[in-house]
Image 1: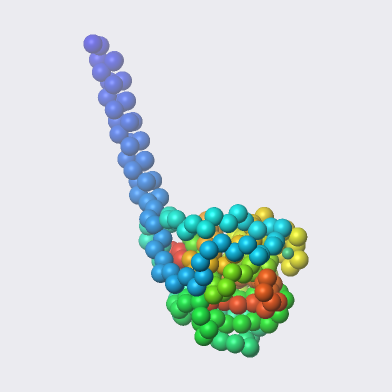
Image 2: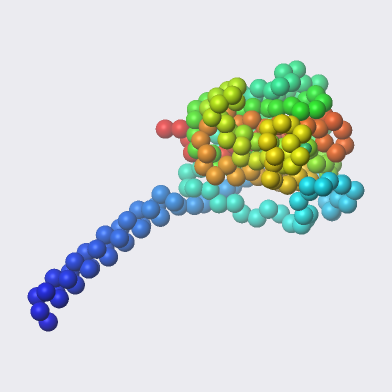
Length: 228
Ligand SMILES: [Ca+2]
Ligand SMILES: [Ca+2]
């Protein structure tokens, strides 16, 4: 074997070793874990058949299954302040959105006025977000209309707004055509994947539901990386 070949071989081993170090460093940064949720008791069972909507997702009747988030993801929204387009709810208080209580019965939801309304959670600092869950109402099978979820660092949502969910397929709410499907409210809540977008404020719109034209929330949970 010539020294040439040996030297080449050594360089090769060094390069391969370096590449390995880089790959493992990247895997460390990308480490995922299952998002752990505390789910309330289901209030109804079976597959509702009386809900008609042109944009409803297929009903599987199965639980959602595990959702993976970057290691270190935490619940950021617990007890955080909430604002709304309806500042004086008819039933309940806005603080119920982030009080950690998710049961479906009476006394656990806030009721907002008719038509298009929004609620907004202030996380206190801009954070990278990895899961947003919403329970509108789950003691009866319902579809809430024109559900839109947005993230921004601007409390007025006038600039730097990222829409992370929108099932307003015919643009009733004039916030853009939504590509997401309508869904039936269930005890496991709706999980929206914000895909790491950063923001201090999370705003959720709705526009009545299949039972009445009012808007309800049992809980909203925002998960992400705590601000450093
Ligand atoms: Ca609650
Ligand atoms: Ca619509």
